Image 1: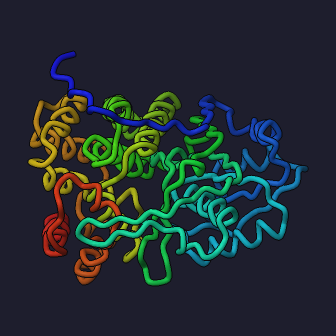
Image 2: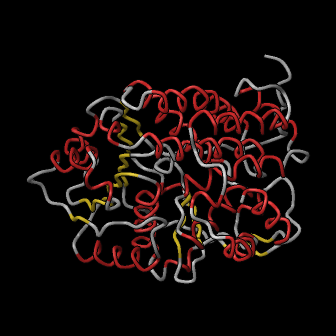
Length: 390
């Protein structure tokens, strides 16, 4: 392989204590796996829709007859109020572990509950705070956290990441980060995933793809992160169209879920940038699904960063088999959008035109701007991207 980027003069790379099990029927082993982790009374978290899925039914069958606490259904983007209620309930009912089943909102809520149970106080006290243009304050979170078991039902990779986001009462996305919040165990069951609509898998897969692209040019990353990101991108490029073509292909589901897992590993040592900052703001203001927002905004954010991150984006284009420059990557993303049928315009996912100004303003308070390779001057630049995507 030629034209490899030079190693930095020095770097560090962290690896979470996560064990991955990927096989058909993996969800049926939940009871035994909980026992092996020493979890005697877990709290189960999922969204309302997930509770009708094979993943959730299989998990419930596995732990039938054991002691557990079933949390209230988790809404999209969760909420500070729900997290604080669940943390208090978990403490009162002797919960000693958490099981997140489904998508990113369930995983993020489990992480937030574990964080609050350990650190105490109010959830907002522990959030990362960004002040434009370039000031970031991240509280130290050192208290030991309860173990989390994740059974992912989407391709977001949230089960692996050490960060999380929860919407507050003002509609802002509070962000947190602690390596202890990475799932101790991840059970990926591709056959049980067949019940998840292919459209949802493809939209959330665009979120995973965005993790990889932003991980390549984030101001905080490691060389090993770049290696994982490029591998995951190549796998997304084949797995996403395969799931779209044949939603009942178990091997395609496994390939997509594995690519998503790799994309989550990217964010253990890198941080998301402008793209995710905008998508967080879209979700917090409108409630639109994070996967749909990612599917729409990704080519626009890549184009914005084209000059500032040209070498990284050239490597990304090559990983997708689409040339060797940023323009080629934008074209490859648009081709992928078309081939898997994901939305490409904000108006098509329920974002009203009247919300764009508020989304732009909220984006300017998002942590991701701190890590972006190109400094965002003001909300007008964000508004221009939103207008182009509308």
